Image 1 (cartoon, helix red, strand yellow):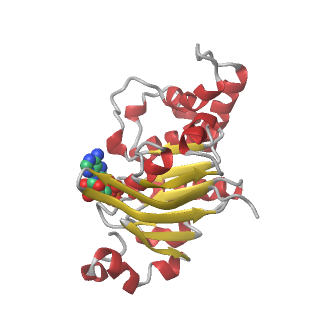
Image 2: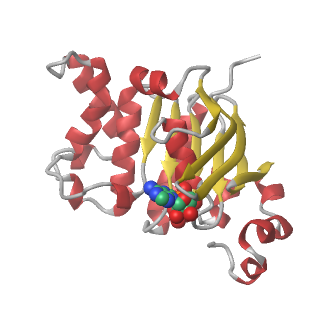
Image 3: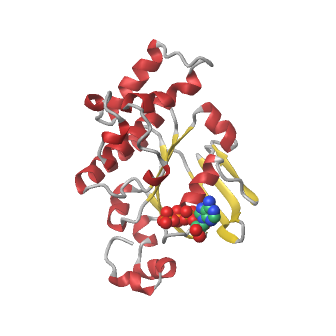
Amino acid sequence: MSVPSIEVRNVTVHYGEVLALDHANITLDPGRVCALVGMNGSGKSTLFKAIMGMVRPDSGTVLINGASPLKSRKSGAIGYVPQSEEIDWDFPLSVRDVVMMGRFGHMGLRRHAKKSDNDAVDHALERVELTDYASRAIGQLSCGQKKRAFVARGIAQGASVLLLDEPFAGVDKRSEATMTTLLRELSADGATILVSTHDLHAVPILADEAVLLMRRVLMHGDPHEVLKPNNLALAFGLDVLNRGTTV
Ligand SMILES: Nc1ncnc2c1ncn2[C@@H]1O[C@H](COP(=O)(O)OP(=O)(O)OP(=O)(O)O)[C@@H](O)[C@H]1O
């Protein structure tokens, strides 16, 4: 049996008095795309940060390909596309600079890019269809293009696990479709992808499985099953049934 790509075991996280995650358990096998669904404040970003080792759980463990988050970050096994609000878009970096950051772990201390680094960046930019935007300032891209630049950073890094925190927020339908196709292609190549979204209609197209989060994992399974109205009502309250496909 293969080692799971992501194993979140009984993870509990508090911020002071606030309980953000409560004995959360998730196991994801290689090559799977999993959508993470839950209301605002249900702990989705905290789960990503716990998987990245950016918040330390009060209890429980996280393993990436059987290794600790810290080790996985160091080896470049895990790539993270944070929520847009967490990034300073005024920082004077070109799209190419952002993608090259994925190569830092492959370079020496002086961070001198070799041919192999430049080739990996070229390939990643091509993969996300941003070759023509390589020298543009990252802040001057559209929201969807910015997200793709961060996915390219993960590709250049050689990450086998990608975490995307709300990649469809503020993105038009065309960009959403482009990103969905890209994520499906990356998973067909073996990447394991965990992606949070409030856009429920996209989930069955995007994901092989879905997790319904409300500090703890309420359900994890086939997207059609997980997103049944009764289950959504558990996670979002009864008025979700009148809200349509965006929660
Ligand atoms: N740095 C922090 N300090 C204190 N409380 C925090 C912090 N970050 C998150 N929280 C709280 O922890 C809980 C979970 O937040 P989290 O951001 O993980 O939820 P989320 O599901 O990602 O929400 P959203 O969909 O709005 O992004 C919320 O109650 C939030 O207010």
